[in-house]
Amino acid sequence: MITGAFPTTRPRRNRFDGFTRRLVAETTLTTDNLIWPIFVCDGQNQRSEVASMPGVARVSVDLLEAHLSEAVGLGIPAIALFPITPTDIRDATGREATNPDNLMCRAAREIKRLFPDLGLVGDVALDPYTDHGHDGLIENGYVVNDASVEILALQALNQAAAGIDIIAPSDMMDGRIGAIRTALDKAGHEHVRIMSYAAKYASAFYGPFRDALGSGGLLKGDKKTYQMDPANSDEALREVAQDLQEGADMVMVKPGMPYLDIIRRVRDNFAVPTFAYQVSGEYAMMMAAIQNGWLDRDRAILESLLAFRRAGCNGILTYFAVEAARLLNSKL
Ligand SMILES: NCc1[nH]cc(CCC(=O)O)c1CC(=O)O
Ligand SMILES: [Mg+2]
Image (cartoon, rainbow, N blue to C red; front, side, top):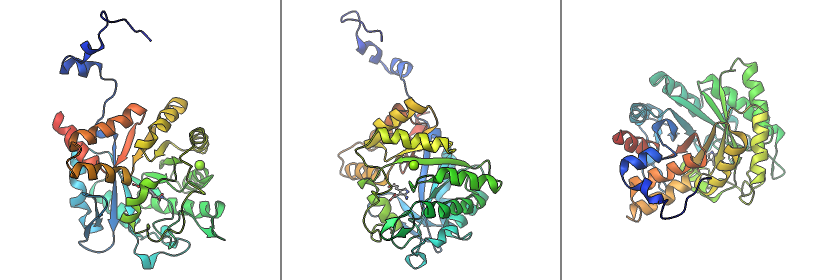
């Protein structure tokens, strides 16, 4: 580290004007870094706002063209799909997850037809499909691992067959990356990528997402026996190492802003494609302040996303993706 003493060295010199600041900037944020999570619902011509996520809507499949065309036009590389399963279709084993005509698969096929070059990220976990709101199967009150992994592998196969490009297991069962990789390869899906939610924490910041999905009210208990303890950091490295060994192509840390330290450690230790999810609660928190006039919308959005890049992320899943892409494109 080269440092010099004042007054010879004046760090403020490099902040003197705009062009110098641009020349010395260590990090960039572009539209290429953005993945947009969207919520898809059943029915025709359906659009409803998520109350705790102002500006975020659930839309039916027939409205996807209008919903996605701006994002595609702005150059957002990929979206992450989240289906809202009607309560009467949910059951204890999440059987709908493996139905080739479920909402997720119908949406994926339609999006591939409309926008063949848009990347599709498919969340693999049973919580959109279970009547208890957990990500796996429950036996004697415990979310069991190995039996859940078997269904999750089938869910991943189902999504790959519908055109999902990147399988993103968010369930935090042990060994699911290896099981999914094996299942995909056996079925001829060796090019389908896996983005593992490798270090996913049992967080309070998922609340608005569970509202959006309608799984919040259903959820019995919490997810602490499978999602990580927010107190832990070394454990995140072991989780990432294991998922990489099992064949993950990209890894994710989730939530985002409260876990930038974890992102940096993952990046430094593994130097693999690293992503973060700026989750629903982070979005809600920022929007609440923005709507009150307490934060400057544009600057707060871009600063929050740049922070992920500085921490070592390749990309960020964010509900601000379209907004951010607009701002970034208007600066070019
Ligand atoms: N396994 C499902 C899943 N996938 C993404 C999120 C949260 C995303 C967000 O809060 O924006 C969750 C919720 C959870 O684990 O309960
Ligand atoms: Mg794991």
